[in-house]
Amino acid sequence: MPLEEAVSRCVRDGMTVAMGTGLESCIPFAAGHALIRQGRRGLTLVGPVSDILFDMLIGAGCAARVIAAWVGNVGAGTAYNFRRAVEDAIPHPVAVEDHSNLTVALALQAAAMGISYLPTRTALGTDLVRDHPRMREIACPFTGERLLAVGALRPDVTILHVQRCDRHGNAHLWGNLGVSLEAARAAEAVLLTCEEVVDDGVIASDPNRTLVPGFLVRAVAVVPFGSHPSPTQGYLNRDGRFYDEYHAETRTREGFADWLERMVVGAEGHAGYLARLGEDRLAGLRPRESRLAAPVSYGL
Amino acid sequence: MRGTGVTRRQVMVAAAAREIRDGEVVFVGMRLPLLGFALARALHAPNAVGLFENGVVRDTPPVAPIITMGDPPNIAGALACTTLLDVMGHLQRGRVDVGFLGGAEVDRFGNLNTTWAQDGERRVRLPGSGGAADIAALSRRTVVIMHHERRRFPERVRYLTSPGYGSGAGWREAAGLARGGPGRVITGLGVFGFDPASREMVLESVHAGVTLDEVRAHTGWPVRVSPVLQTTPEPSREELAGLRRFDPDGMWTG
Image (cartoon, rainbow over all chains, first blue to last red; front, side):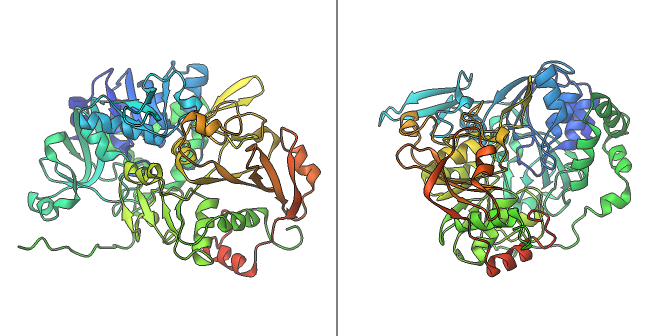
């Protein structure tokens, strides 16, 4: 279904939404832009590393809360909208629940397994865990050792960008997986954006690569280059220049407002966004060589 | 160094590479540690294996320059692409020998802050831990790579994001951390180790052309100095050749 319809069907104001679960690749930017265009408010954003997608959503006024291990610009460091919101409540205050990458992953995995927490040995003794709403020090019931319990985190929706899926949402994805599998299983529903929809038989030809089963998926939208400026292995390389441009243009609130109007709000959907980038730029981001995996036999 | 055509960053990367022993499992970071890992593999540690927190396992340098560990040249030709929980499971299980870290601040006991900084009266929000707290808590040892500036070397970090030795001897054990702690801090001025008894940072070598006064001026506490203070070895001819191969344009070490 069209991206705007898929996003409006899955995400309502006040929901908890996991995005950017690949860490630094397959970030669902196009879906995030649709959330901005639809004027979603009061969202809780969940992700380990948010790329600059959370910065855009925060600057656009969509987010009330961020649950993350790292919010910045993977190319240039600082994310200015995040800083403005946390330091100066611009455009409004945003609450931050700080995590490490592992505690985000465990919070999602606990929810994926239908339990209330998982124990870990990470982050003990740090300021991260002090007075944390989702972390408690506990004693192991077997050994008595000190452990950190990380409470389950169940998103209303997890949005993933994947290489390909069938019309039922059975999705093939490859490359680094980050916390995408845990986030998909933790959520009430999954929204997929994909580079292409393929015949059912293509997915069933390689079931080990089906990392998100379709019964978890509420909506699928075909969105080529839907992860721009982050990469999607085999379909889109990183647009490194974009990160530097965004960094320079969003240093001030006014600069961000101009950027948002030009690239997202004033663009005619994702096609309009790609048009603003221009065909030459996009052509330069397509992989120049294919590197095919050796086929595997599922023969009887 | 000055006059010899060798940059400080080349000295830092060569020092980082020497921290990796053959056959070790390494939690690799980006930029300088990534180069250090490539250099170690090419020279003295041909059997080292690299893990990346996004789920990548690889034993060769990326096939082209990368900005993040998730860039296509770091995926192509990897040994395995898996999940964050899978690679961090190795870390928690105790299988990672050495992890590389950086930060905005490092203190006397090797604690790192990547969450809050101070700019005059103003608190500045930094991006946060990412995987750093996990690597610091769970690796068998860590190597910290830092710019050496006084504001980055306070006596005590303002916010403890990633644990070093806390307040000193016994702190990690009392906190419940199973193992680990920083083994080295490599800066633009020198290389530090840690006193095994007090767990305090100790200056072990200064880079050629750097004076002790310079290190003291850029450090926010009275620096302890090893009684056998050395000069950091200059990169060897083989190390320099490797650096030119892995960073041909000097993007990271120029």
